[in-house]
Length: 459
Ligand code: GLN
Image (tube, rainbow, N blue to C red; front, side):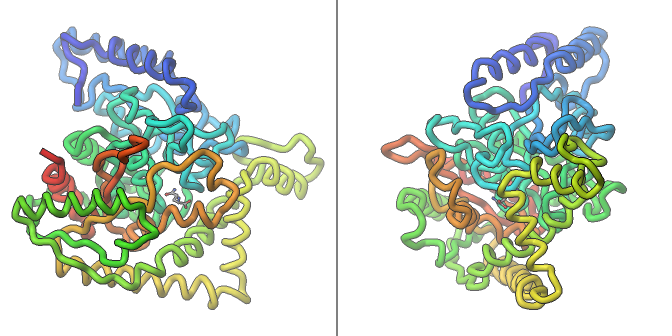
């Protein structure tokens, strides 16, 4: 991480990032640019440096913040119309920790509204364009953050990953994207999607930067009772020997070049002395179905708080309490938000709870156990992130099931709570689109997983 010092002033670094953000404004990366506050903070850091005072580990480093992290700088809208006009009185724990180390937010990034989606096309503000091909999607839901790092506007950006929203856009734009073990980073002050699978993480250009950010942002937080006792910084280093590959993922529904990239990577690791273990994980075939029941159920519950009274938008048509609720929610949510609210309420309703929600919860247990068994046979698992490289804008947005199928290789990690890192693994031959692979580890293996990622870089 390049931090500010006597030779590189924070003001210069921030100004450079702001200029780049402006230069790439046709990619629709940012929903808000934080010019004034950012330059003011940068100046304060430069003054500290000039006085010889101690500065933080991220002194003057400009970063991009996904639009679902609460902070008083700019409106927090989660790229949804219903939150327009909402300025948060609180700061998310993760944001506070970054800022305490001197990081400077230069803008909020575009996302699928409420993080529902895999392309950033569900944003109220319109889609972010891919860093490598502007006719293609950025991936999602954290599309803006991935592109901000891929285009070198910032050295890092924040993301949230409920079912792949960090890893898939990272892979579509050729950067590192990490979803830690559930509970590693506090969710306090982050707009909730599905509380039992939501994870906070980052996009970076290197595993080393990721490790630094994890050391800073991880840890127990009394404002989020699901956070784990601090383990990240205290992890003992353990080197890996066996790398698993999942047999069922090597099939025709996965792009040929992605399968080739996976093969090349395992061959490289084999040459370095790693043992490659073939895994059968049949329970993973239930992951997508279970995810698209459990997550909408939690979404329906978490989105019930947006009622036109407490946050953001209130419909101008509304005449009484009933129409305030109905018209505001009708105008303020995107079609995908509404679809999930309806599915969620359906699977939780008394007549269908046993048939859907309960079954999905049981499938989830099988998936948790499947990963536990797999990690008795290997240290890490290497898989594709998604079945294809970045697809064309408009290709899937009107076909929800096609869009959901994008997540077939990413959602099981969230259901099991295990960490996953998307790593860049070359480009497609014809279109020069980034290919991503995913390293999956056991719970709380995060620090060693990031160390292993360095082993996976081509020499
Ligand atoms: N694409 C997945 C979904 O639409 C994951 C979203 C996320 O991780 N926030 O649910």
